[in-house]
Image (cartoon, rainbow, N blue to C red; front, side):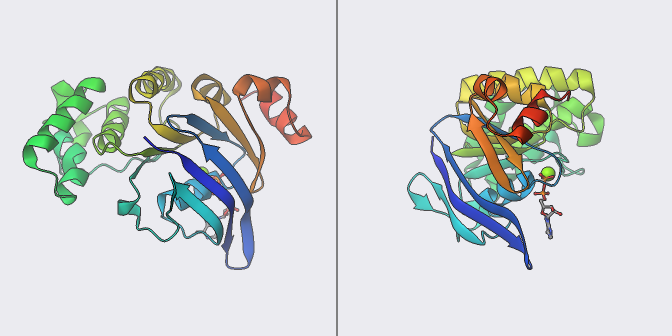
Length: 238
Ligand code: ADP
Ligand code: MG
């Protein structure tokens, strides 16, 4: 369990600043959903937290530790992406176990953790299959499983459901909600789906052009939009 704190975080690519100073406090076990139009900086923000992009200025902290210069593998964070690249030649078990193997986790413990995650995600019957022998929803669950087995302090999700069809998206949304309840891991979840945001978020952040326009409980944001942009964005049909 952990807190995640972003303090005046900015990001420039070359001379272009794309994140203009974002402050976020994610409390222990809180699930925060970030919404905003394409290109507003959601992925860049997440990638900085994950250590996949450098932070131009400001600080990212996990608990009391500034992680700006900490390697991604040493941040105690797991990230689930939209195109959850699984290793095609590896079984479901090996895909889920891979990160633990690299980290030198003992075999028996790997087996335990994978079994536990597989049960949670209803993947037990598929552990020996290859990714190509799975449905889209099952593959997405393997990607989640790969993150869960690492027991990270912080979960990052970047539009994890956007490649799934509408029906599956609804089902996976419910499953993520259940996982959130069971695991209670501090999470930042990016989506452009407002229903997803409303369903999952303890608090939501509406981003607009590299700025966090508003942070608040979904119903508060909905009822009391802080800016005209938020009003238009939240009020508009998804
Ligand atoms: P979102 O995830 O909200 O759609 P991104 O974080 O991907 O937005 O992008 C935010 C802005 O940063 C966009 O203007 C995008 O073009 C720019 N950007 C993202 N990554 C890079 C990069 N590696 N080099 C240059 N510009 C980038
Ligand atoms: Mg993105």
